[in-house]
Length: 452
Image (cartoon, rainbow, N blue to C red; front, top):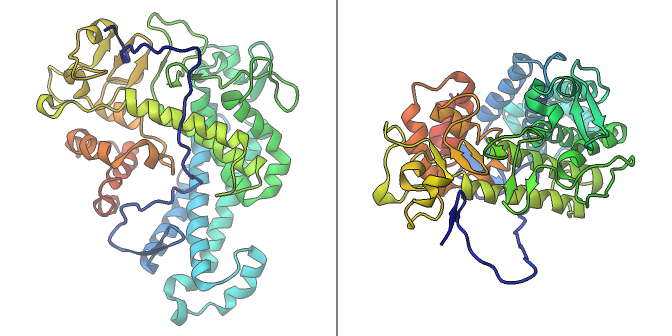
């Protein structure tokens, strides 16, 4: 038996390999029997029916969050994309909550018809939250306008760090990154594109599902971001405008996951840190392909491009759960806070690891998460720090419907109490939202209480 960084090699006899991956039904929301908080009601079409108090609380926070942090045109494409995606999530939350209230009241969802019925909303008949539905719709419209404005800024190239087409290697790169290889996390040398553009694809899909005019105006612009990370054809393929894009730029079909490294050479080969942002990149590509190329906003029949993007996403999830999410054998478990716990595993250490663990030895697996996986090494650390919080949450963010596929209840059931729960009291505010969402996967009631 020969062991590698990914476990024992297995010989396969044959000239052709067939790979099957189940593609679940997935839209902007993952409709499943989730662990609902105690203050929710029953479900309607897979969604949670919330009481008036919860509705008011959610919409008040959406309104506040819209003004809390605004994007800036001098941000790099990664930072700007994250801020725009944050606005898109607020749009989606407001849309879901407001639409559900309208559905419960059997009122039309289009704005014109809605405005004609607002005056007839009865507090006595529908409750106090329903009487404020005009305020909620106004919040939704404000959020939508803000999202549209910032996406226009990006696709009209009105930000400082503009996006350009690089004919030499066939891709969309940032102006600053093209000029300086170290700028924008190496974007100009093709580092992290699936991280960066996933946020913009997600935001564009949200906007396109609400406003078809956005798709008409900027559809080809967004398509090029999708083609940059998820183009489904061979090496001779071209995009809609005849420009060349390579097949699924970051994906290693042999390894079963992506590598974020672009054209930079490293002794241990290419690597990837944030599996969750990789998943988000392909999830955003899938959502956009549904909105743009299928005319569906939530759960329409898939197309070839949609299926291909979803395949990339599901392969990434399988790869993350196999090579990043770790659990030591119960009898050999040790706390990741143990000073003797190894934070780096190389090919040499893998070769001598116990045969009872197919990939990582128990000592390393007690970290419960690989921070950065290279071709020849695995480290429980990140590019920006060794703290366990960073290692786990950089592989958790952002939180979308795809998170529930990536982080299973079984895994979080051991990861959260062994790692995240031990850090309570030492979690900076910037990360608390993510740790609370991690907790919500296994205990939504306690997570809701913690969020308050």
